[in-house]
Length: 327
Ligand code: AHM
Ligand code: MG
Image 1 (tube, rainbow, N blue to C red):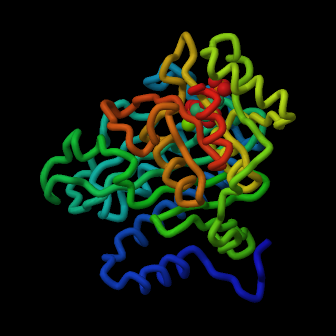
Image 2: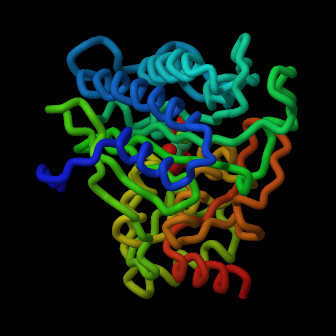
């Protein structure tokens, strides 16, 4: 709950954080200002989705061959136009765009990867969806053309990551590498206010989130872990919006898995837009994220839309899953 006596807005919080690091350029605060604006616009559109004609199919497919919803398009456009404003971003990588989006005439040194509307298959059903983002610094000199090497960086190089959750309330949760903080949008003042300071992932949890419909296509080791969870009475919870499943498990404790299947050995989730930012957040909160072989943040990206298997959540649950999977 927001403490009315002691409201700290996202902007105030970022400003205070910057005072602690006087050498920082303040560029991130401008980027967050733009993220915040787009989030508020998308939030407005999500909230009135049932009232106006923005639900349903857009009639086109994205580069993964999936149906694009109207709200996906709206969210993508809002974040694109907002993020181009700051002048601090030189390139945008979007789950909805095949190629790198170069920001013209930018002297910016930051690159942002974004899933503008995660969980989009849930839009029509009024289920929680969200925006996920990841920010890193370019490697090549400012002013030069942005290269693939600038964009395809390991998750370890992220300098910030976060998500916005359009749920029963709207929240922005982020990290810059000094813990994880959550802010709830107070619509009465139109601002995100600190509501979840220094979020910690519970070490243990009682939730396992996996699409059980894929069970028959999982490897025997993944099946073994799921059977173990069933035997131990670990609760199954699966929304089908990664951002929402992740947030619930972050708060309550649990593990989320999207392993490879026979049809999709790399799983479904995208390294740059979904896995890396959530891996940064969970590690900052004390949890873990792995492909099953290596830490998510150590994966060397080969292409923008690369998918990776993921097991992410409470540290003891991830450890336990790994030991059973590898036994
Ligand atoms: P999206 O970014 O197009 O919404 O796809 C990613 C989503 C995740 O949010 C979610 O966890 C997963 O796809 C659900 O996939 P499935 O329906 O195969 O379980
Ligand atoms: Mg997604």
